[in-house]
Length: 323
Image 1 (cartoon, rainbow, N blue to C red):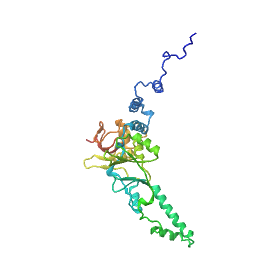
Image 2 (image 1 turned 30 degrees about the vertical axis):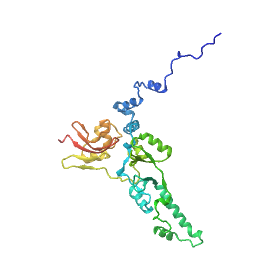
Image 3 (image 1 turned 90 degrees about the horizontal axis):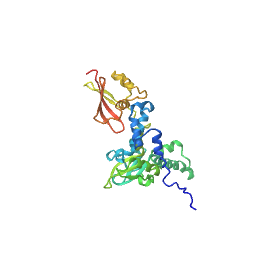
């Protein structure tokens, strides 16, 4: 007696994958969901569904897989470093002027990297030394110094030896070493896994080519991240002798309207756009490149003087009505 076949063989239709079901649910027929989303974001008819900020951020997320470490790194010439044998006073001075929370540490040159020093470790080292100094007299049975005396002695570098070389302070942390061709997204994942927020980019000859931080990668998605200590200079709005205007892309549209006498808000129905850069991106539908020209016929022309793949920086404005 033969048993019934319960294996169903190949007669049962193959169950569609989750991706296929999602694509079918939303009526997306392209082979790539990424392409579908990018097309939807480029479609101005769906503008009411996404704000400019949301649209830009989603595009940046989708584009992150194309970026390499070399696209986000700070070039070697712009890296601010300290030497392993620099004394603590010099390191403190570099921290004050650089405005960074982490500084790479090198030996004889940047091609001899030793790690990095974090401002929190530096402050903790100084605070610990000051604490030991303050408790010192009582521990030795001596008369406790007054607070004023302690402060004056600390200012005079009494017990706190800022002449000590960085190598003796034991506060240098390791950094990651990565090639310039490494995908930026892979570096972000590695930084998260190792809790190391700085990487030195090493070229094929073993030399230091640049530096990448977790902030550099995140800024590729959300734009510039400025903190309380970044300079808050008023965006440049400057009239040239030939009648053109040189304008920082961060310039507020209301300020521009007051200064130039042209109603920039009339160029778009997007209510949340506040800056010149945001306005031009909306009008053009993308981030224009340096050297490109975008014109609103009969109204105004924008010449892109400075930009990168994520944002506009500086533009020249020409009012066409006056020509």
